[in-house]
Image (cartoon, rainbow, N blue to C red; front, side, top):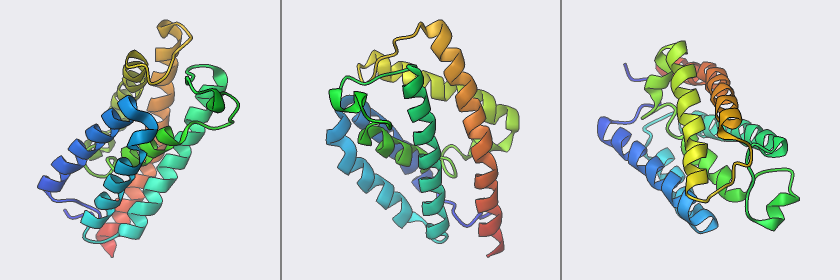
Length: 180
């Protein structure tokens, strides 16, 4: 079924590769990767046949929720950043906001399988989200000052809940696309 925002199978692969390039680019180069990642997000929207506006709102909405979650985690001390300017900021750095935009492009496309079953949404979302932070910490992109035995289960739970809350918005977008 064409859900109105579906990419072709070739473009789904490009969506997955584009996100991996975005994640690694941001993880390794932070601010230097912002422009290329934003260009990839724009290309994502250009490849859609229809429902671009709805997908753009979905991407921005997911990114805003994600930035709120990460700002909360930052305030709790679950992770921190090297940059001294960020230490006094109430929100996360621009490169992390950009990464949220890139991640949101995957949810209705190469990661759409996550939303087929609520348990899968929670478990895969929790595991993937938590491991993403651990991987970024291992690369030196951020620091995780709390013991992993504390921070990883917390990240797992928050990511599982986060994606479970995003799931209805994704479903709504698919239904709207199928009926228009």
